[in-house]
Amino acid sequence: NQAGRKAAVPRCSDCHVPQLHPRQAGVMAQMGDSDEGQGALELAAQELGVDLAGEDADLLDIAQELAGSESLPPGWKVYKDKGTARRFYNNQETGESVWEHPLMGYYQGEIFMRRGGLQELRDASHQHPCTEDEVDDMAEYLEVRADDSA
Image 1 (cartoon, helix red, strand yellow):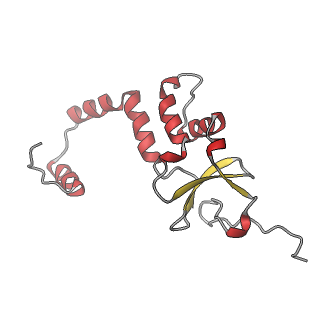
Image 2 (spheres, helix red, strand yellow):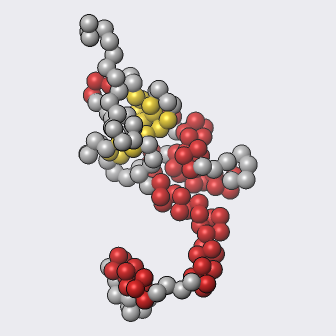
Image 3 (spheres, one colour):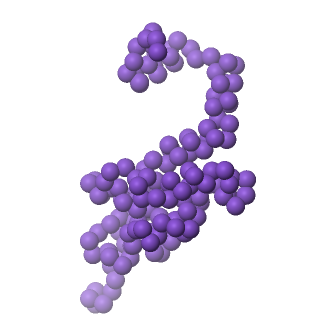
């Protein structure tokens, strides 16, 4: 008898991220303003892999920004999977759901730079300068001419 059974949360086959379905209200909770406090900050710090109570206290502002719903690109919403207590992100336009914040690469890059990444990049570029092919590839990627001056 299926009438009394709850439907299982649909999950994508490769990443097991909960997929939203209109009948799944109650299985997932959209995170709102009431969730944007200490709990959301702790989840953001965990996602970033930083210890705000210890050596990474100076990265608090990055974790705070990530914790807020305004950090999401247009069309994305953050939800909390009640089964795992993890946040996941859903693109309302495409239906795509992912565990990682859609802009996580940006936030990880910001942390890398704060931890001395800029100096590491400068040191590496002096030790191993870019080849002409690498410069051309980057210029093509950025849609600029390699011989343009700033």
